[in-house]
Length: 186
Image (cartoon, rainbow, N blue to C red; front, side, top):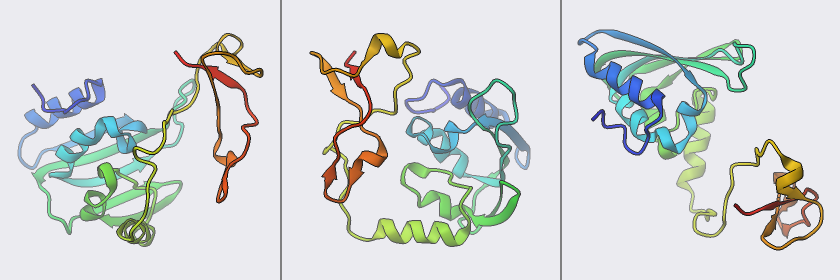
């Protein structure tokens, strides 16, 4: 109904619904969890937002007690975007400007507003160079949050358990032996 793609997350639904009733030249400000700006699930709604004029992106860090995620904000004006539109980016006491186009060029339309224009150009340059990715070459997990590691993790090899590798276990010459526990495949 709201053209949010695969996301049924309330962030996508409320943002899309708000955009659909926003008057021309109207302003919309949303305080959103950090995931909105960089997780694939939100790519479709980010594309819709990129069609509008984004005025400001703000990182408030961990503004609320008891929440693990950062509080971040977006301010949008309901007008068609121009690739040269300037977006004010506020992160960690830094304020700098980026072009709207610099976000459109990112893989998955990620809003990496914590990087300045120079850093964004370096990232774009790196992606323009021929490279190999791990897509279709590796199985991935976002991490283990079991709430019950004693039940789901083991230090000893067991049937249906796989090793857990951390970033520090990856080297130029291959994988080190994992130093962490094993986890059960669920």
